[in-house]
Image (spheres, rainbow, N blue to C red):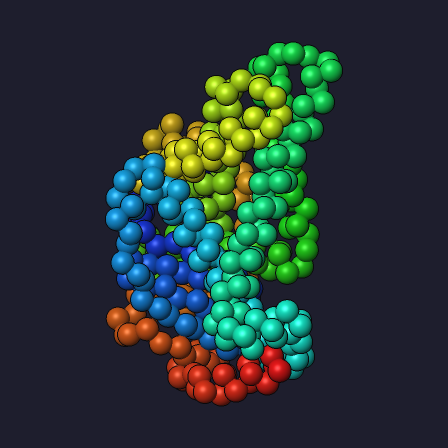
Length: 341
């Protein structure tokens, strides 16, 4: 791996960051956030929103890492749902609500239904992650007590198993066509941010010359989480199973806080220590990012341009010829009502 192409010497790091979504990219700048989605007819639909005022908790080291993690989890899920909803508007297949969804919408309204779907998705995702990557490894390694009482080896194998399970899971889902497409948009996001931070004109050709790996990627944050957890769990020893699970859960805020600070440091520094610490996350990005095509780079460029645009928050569509047209939201609402019955 050529780190000189990732930690670019003349780059000017920014706070801009993004997320790959269904057929598109969410890009967040200092003032605005843009969601750009490639709709089935080839055009790009963009929705921009003004960023909310930063929470005062984001000024406190360590605490801000926990706050940022929770916010990114909720907003990330919401963005995925927003991109899916946009694509649904152009899908001829009608969406059939479940009886429970119909009951919630009738009883509490469509906004309540949306919030229910959003937060239930977050809860399910968190429960799956905790069960799969925190509870399951420590339960499995508990069986090793029949072979060794060494606290060192029990913790070592648990941490190693947790990391391998996570990497294996990411590698396995990367073969799914929809996930692979999302990973290509992830690569497009990184290439475009590299191009922007190197102050070059945002064209697909310029963006394509940069790597798909970026030191400030959220994938690296997750890898920092696993590595820091690996180290801190040694301090807790190897108590009984229920206490081990409880203490690992209680340590999560500390791990998230430390990981966030480490990621911020890695994003603004290129010394040798940072490069070494960033290697695991960069290698994981080789799985979570794929080489994008020109069309995916165009979506990423459109998202950055929308974030840098001084116009108020709006929704519009970029045509194949580069022209802009506003979105008629009343038509969208009618179509959405028809599809959701």
